[in-house]
Length: 363
Image (cartoon, rainbow, N blue to C red; front, side):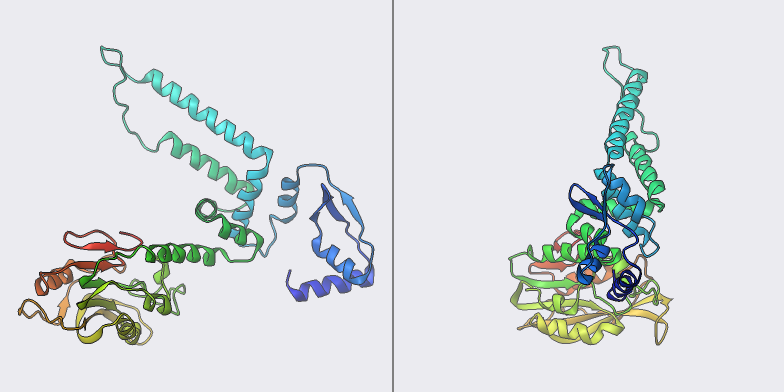
């Protein structure tokens, strides 16, 4: 409860007395901890009553439909309460029995070979497990008064990061913030596993964090990055201990709003800016100051690392963009042509490429 609302509650109790009793269960406050605190501060003996039913059902009934709860927070509370209740155990048992029954019926109907063994079962639509999961999620969503997406997000966060799910449930963290923190921590975990080799060629597409990251002000290009991958702060990106050889080259992707920061990151990694390629995406994107259709690929060196091949490529490459943040393979071909020798590392990679060591949350 915010401080101003607590002060209003305290003033009301001082003026009219404690109208609603504090509900206890097993000697603990089940409902009314703010009333209890107000009474203690006012020097009033708290009025209580004992509840001897299902405490989790009571808590949900009293608090589940509060208007100040978002769908995701209500879903997080619902699955927590549901997991403690008798209904949850009953539902789990029913789901398990139904799954066993369907498997048994399916086994009876499956054709056998002449030797008596089962023929492979045809794959039709969703699996029994998937259907059961959907049924369970639908039941929880209906009980909580939220959509199935909120239940799915809540369960995913609970499974991956119960500590953050607990903060969402108690109101200490917003659901979107908790999901971003989980993604961010996943990236930081990968940071600990950077390769120990020394690389001559480094190709990096950092997950830049933008000030308008969740606003949707910029479409498809470089805005709202955290909808697509776990963004990192400039400080976190600079702090990476990039395993570059004494003589190395860095090809670093950056965008118009992050151009200056891109140079800063290169310098923090021990490189000096030398040149750049421009990727003309052909399709336009909405921007704050102009219609954006390009990104920069900075070429930076450490020590002495001039191209091993004298072939010159056009600095502007016009290639129509596809998925969010996906870079054309043409640029990898340019890098491999200019630097055919030496160990190659791709940072923040989305997939593994032949001849490259891939490091990143998606690789």
